[in-house]
Length: 452
Image (cartoon, rainbow, N blue to C red; front, side):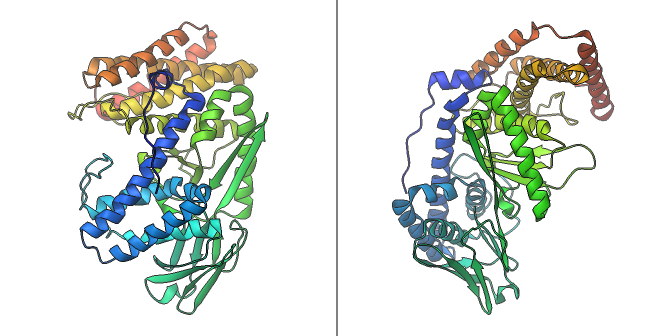
């Protein structure tokens, strides 16, 4: 499979450090695509090198994937770029190395809780073959009676498959079925459709001002979920339709008032993974392992979805940048106060948080100009709250002594952005709301953790 060389220009680095990046984030997305290819090849090589019993099946799957890529590069790229594909490859590679750091620079983790299944690469290959209409017969693993095909959906075998393997048969120019024992599940031509034994991955799309976005609403691929999160389960048709309505409204708002952020989201975000709702409010999560995926509970309205995407795309940008440029030194165990968390954070966590909240503050800085009455006061308060919180953490990071030279330059650029914002006038009622919220959070944090 083909790889490209990736170099981050000084101009792109400066734009990212200032909090933006715009369409230049395409460079980060391209680097992540190459990273996924490296991880997939790493799985194949590690399976062979460790003499894993699935090594031969893994190699056959890789050869099919490479063949489809040669004939239908766009379809192969869509599956290879899929956040679940990258997460699976990284976790599998880590497991094959006994939990040690993966060759892509991932952190050392404890040994895997489940055995490595490198033959799951066959599901990636089968998905690309189905999308491209390339004839193939692929043996794929069955997990608890389910065969999951990334970007397409999953087959639920009525009898549990009668074993740990199934066969995916792809006909020329389209059409596929999954066979395991007496079970036979046909993949519908429209993969999004529900069919007997088949749960398709739904697709969302929105258009505004000549700019469009297409996302997968993936409630079937467990690999898309970051650790310690709970999936919402299979959405009903009505629930999926509600997500479409929310995206329509959020995309209209983003394109109209936050067009640079919209460009970044459109370039990076590919998947929304619905989470179970928390006891109160809304939750959203991004992970280094699932670049391009935002896992989130159903937002209250389209404005909440818009600011959530503005927040999470900052995490995605920074994690992709960290794969190219180290910004922090190794963790010394020091922990610090973060105005948006209930627990003390390491420097790496502080950096992620401040960069995300720089994006949140920027969202409200613009959005407050388009609100009226009490909504305008609340929007101004959100701007002040997160502007000042980010500025406080930038000072903490600068004094920590835990940044690389590039990290120091990055944080200094964030500081310049925030310094400009701190000079902007804000109504007194909004200042009061923001300061009371900040004081309340610090008081509760101290009760829980002691002095920062």
